[in-house]
Length: 107
Length: 111
Image 1 (tube, rainbow over the protein chains, first blue to last red):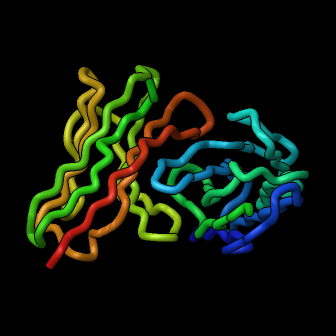
Image 2 (cartoon, each protein chain N blue to C red):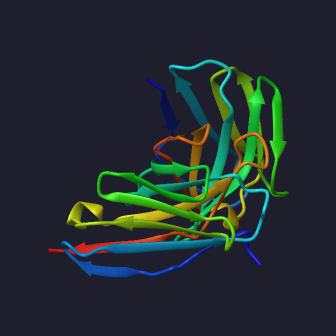
C-alpha cells in the first residue's frame, strides 16, 4: 500500500531563514507528487507538482521552490522565509493520498 | 471568483442528524470531484470521488454531482461524533491530477 512520509511535523523558523521540507512516498513508482499549502481556516492551495525526476511545475509565484531529486522524494525549499509562508504544508501522491503535513510557523 | 466555492459553515448538528455539505464550481473543464475529511492537525483523507452527474453512495455517505448547475454535495446520514472534522471538496481533470479545493466546512456533531 502507498504511504507518504513528511518531516518535520512541526517547525518554527525566524523570518529570513531557509527552509527545507521533505516528502517521501512508498509503495509506488513514478508517482505524480504535489505540494499544497493550507492557511488557517482555509482550503488547500496547490503550490507545485511533479510528474517525474527533475520535473517541477509551479502553480503560484512565490517565495518557495521545489525539487525532485529522486523518484519518490519531493522537497519544498525557501532561501528566505516570509511571515506569509506560515501554514500547513501537505505533500500528496495523486489525488487520493495525502501525507501527515508539516505545520510551519514563521516568526 | 474562486473556481470552487464551499459553504464555509461552521455546522453544528446533533448526533443522528443528516448533514448536507455543498460546493459550487465555475470551471466547466473539471471532470471529477472529490470529498475529503480532515481531522484537526492531520492530512486530508479521501472519502469519495465521482466522475459523472448523479449520486454515489458509500455507507452513510452520498456524493451528488449536478454538472448542469455546477453543484456538488456530500450527505452524511446518521451523523456520529466521530464525523466531526473539516470537510473539503475538490475538483480536478484539467491536467496532471491537479486539484482545486473549496475552503472547507467545519462540522461538529454533538452527542
